[in-house]
Length: 187
Image: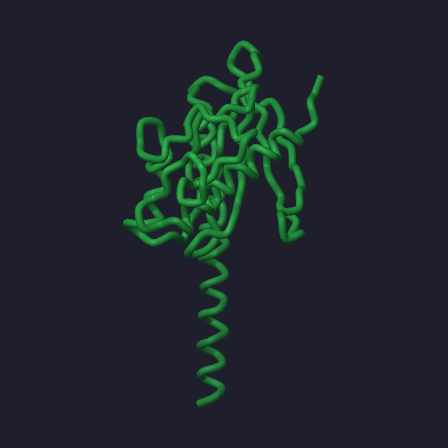
């Protein structure tokens, strides 16, 4: 009986490894496409190119190292449009990973959620709540003065019943801005 169970486990392990091998490429392609679409969305331009990709490492308030990926963006004519910055922070349900677009002056052009584990119907509303024309609109703002929810004395309305997610989201945006400002300027 033990031999049969061991043989079944080995065969199933092999089948799972093969399926993982087959799906790895398409999954990576889908992630790359989602990132490319996200960059176009946050930069509000369809015809663009990623001029360079940088990594910036910074420590948060607790001393934990955070890594930000910064995509320097140009339009089709080579004009600098700013950058799209990946930022991750801890939300209510787990990590909250966003992509934020900044113009050369540091104003927010747009954002998109790349990954989250927030409560559906509550924290998951962050994908729309902070967009232009919505209650927590941050588009066009410059986080040189950190964005803070109004409940904490700031100027941004938190998602109803999701203050923790709202704080985490704004922290991710503020951290993305700091990383963007720390990006080395290429001449």
